[in-house]
Every structure is written in C-alpha cells, then in structure tokens.
Image (cartoon, rainbow, N blue to C red):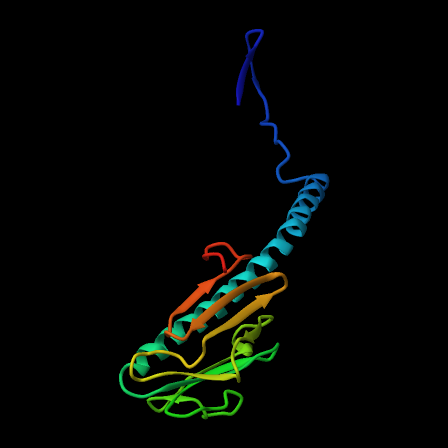
Length: 183
C-alpha cells in the first residue's frame, strides 16, 4: 500500500486483522445453543409421541373403514383386539382370529394385523365390546356391537374410534387438536 505523507512516498505494510473467533465467543455461543436445545428437546419428544398417537389411531380408523368396505363385498370381516400396553388387532374373513398369533388374521390370504411394536409408547383400551372380537356383517356392513369405543392414548392425550351398530366409524378427541370433540 502506498501512502503520501509530507510529500514523501512511504511503503506501509498491510496490517493483518485477527481472524476467527475468540475462546469467549465460542463458549458463549455453545451456552446459548445448549439452552435452546434444553428448551426444544422436551417439546420435540412430546411432538413425536403425539404424532405416533395420531398415526396409531388413524391407522386403526382406516383399517376399520377397510374392514367394513370389504365386508360389503360378500363375507363377514372379524376384528380381533387385544388391548393394553402390548396391544394388537387383526382382521380376518369369515371367522375370528388371534392377533397375538402369527398368520392367524388374514384378508384375501394376506396377514392383516397391527401391533404396539409399530407404535412405541402408545396404549390401546376398549370399551363397550362384549368380547375383544366383533364383526362387520357382509349384508350391509353393520357391526354386531351397539356402540364400542377403542381408545389410543399416550400420557394425558387420547384419540377415540367409535363403532356403532350401523357400522358407522367415527374418530374424535378431546385432548388432541385436529379432531372433532368426543361426546
């Protein structure tokens, strides 16, 4: 760099400014990021659990719609449920099945069952069923329960699927947004 001072030409070496971050800047940034992660991780964990809850309930709802539709094609469809923390449910044509037993629940030769292993931390309970098996009738898709309720829950969040004698299937929740309230 050339500089004119008092009429003389002087060569001045370029000044190097320090580059990078100081140790203090790195420590402060690390502390701020750590605090933000501590705030975000519990919310993310809750989000994952509620997402699994929604997925389990919607999967069951979809399978019940499928079972009712399949029944109207000509054969009764039986739904077997085993509630609890290690739950399962399965669909079978023409007779009851055991969802806890391999290859027991089949539709058109394909195994049709879902277990709690597919949805970790989600619990299933049932109300209003005389046993843990009910069926959709092949004549009109009606069910043999007056009104049964399957509830999936995690913590204080729950989603219910209600099946009535007409075969109508409803999904509702009083604790998870995006669903009609249960009555």
